[in-house]
Image (cartoon, rainbow, N blue to C red; front, side):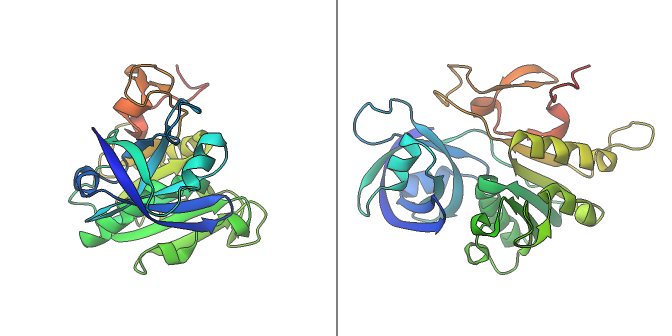
Length: 266
């Protein structure tokens, strides 16, 4: 974890309220891994005082890209960063996704803004010869992640709540059709979606007698509000089978079997 001064070399709006910022910082790019995030200061002053966590969206030799959804004061300031401006970036932070060398077919599932870290993972996986299916859910067609931001080798499946594009319904309803095909599952998105992924994939992780089957690992990246992002403020803890753990330091990526969902702590 280091502090970087990263120059904004591109700022493109790809969806409503959502921008992709290219940040030039070779040192940050060298250290970054898919699944990690950065903590960005919201301008030169102290208002807002807290930085904002952003998933690493793409990794290039000269820097990284982040996908910023302008939903509040801080994220709107960052999304409005002009070209050639400098951002104060702390990172990379958190634990990344882990690609098992034996896994060749990967199913990825992202809810809304949660697609961001999966794109970097898909690029890395394709580079290692894996096949990748990416399922993405959105409220309407206007908020569907644009396919031209993905490598052409990624099979892309879409679900929208209102049926204006792709499958009508939850994106998790697409997952069963790929479950027998894939060797591993990766997901990022709202907590109810991640809980659904854990529930749907559970039969693939456990045998009929309840014994764990390690050949179908499922990794979930949690989206939590963060304060310090360094494990100090404890504002992002989640319940796991090891007790409370910090999403910023112990995650954001957790094996599905380690997480305890509300109402299922027995």
